[in-house]
Image (cartoon, rainbow, N blue to C red; front, side, top):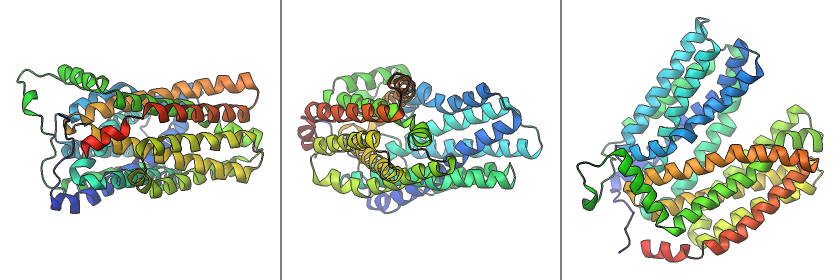
Length: 417
């Protein structure tokens, strides 16, 4: 018998739970967006060593690769609401400590590294917990809409608000963005404190083993994942999309400056248009997911993103290319909302953390690989435009493969309805 992964969300939880979760996620993502700008700016004031500056980016990214699976396993054992509260509180304290160091002139590059790592580790926990908490605060019919709104809070916080606020407030005085970030994380924690009830996943009676360890939980999660071909095919599809799209995305700045001959200031428009496209994708994604078969939405999202990059590869017009980049961002968000909705519907609640951990590790692990391959491709092919065209062709091919490989998806979703 198929396991029903839906949770029993009471009317009170449905009414208050999602707004509180979205509010907490919006505040936390605003803090993340500010921090991702403030940390490099602070690092540049204490050292001009390019290796140390580059290493800071790696330090911010590293926790996702090393801890996503472990964090997922822990989130299948603890109250997920409390995990968000603790993680946001830890981030608020760490960033507040950085503000004190900056105010007193005591910040060193190594303290910046420590602060970035602490914030990164807490981000893995908070972001993962927010994602796996969704089925507990909405009923089954609202999963795709909730996924879209969660994506929107991330895009607004990190793309539109966080980055500009981080740079502007740093220009006022260096500690300002850290104080603002600490306040954002504190608000995120407070909003989740306001959500009453227990959100610890219930383990099935057959899994109530007194000697169960974190290691056995991890093994059980991996066993479930690989025993479900539809789900691990989706994991591979998500990783493939991350890899093939990053081939070109990592080269975007060179594409704009060299192939389109834009100024550094004009390049910022690409990020803005990408954010607008992402919001547009989040606005329509839930309707597409609810109206059309999942495999067609998935293949359509991948195919559209690929066509957009193919067209960018042959376009020499900055305006056309910027619009195409927005189309790409919208299509990727639609694919991501589909991925999230399918996870909520197919994965048992008590396994959501572990499956998401594996998912995030695969997807995030593909990003640096894609970036490195993209640089090699640009060297080999001679232009970033050629890399964009190659990346787009790979995504279109991946869409065709996904359309065939996900043929069983509709049947699996029907069984869980």
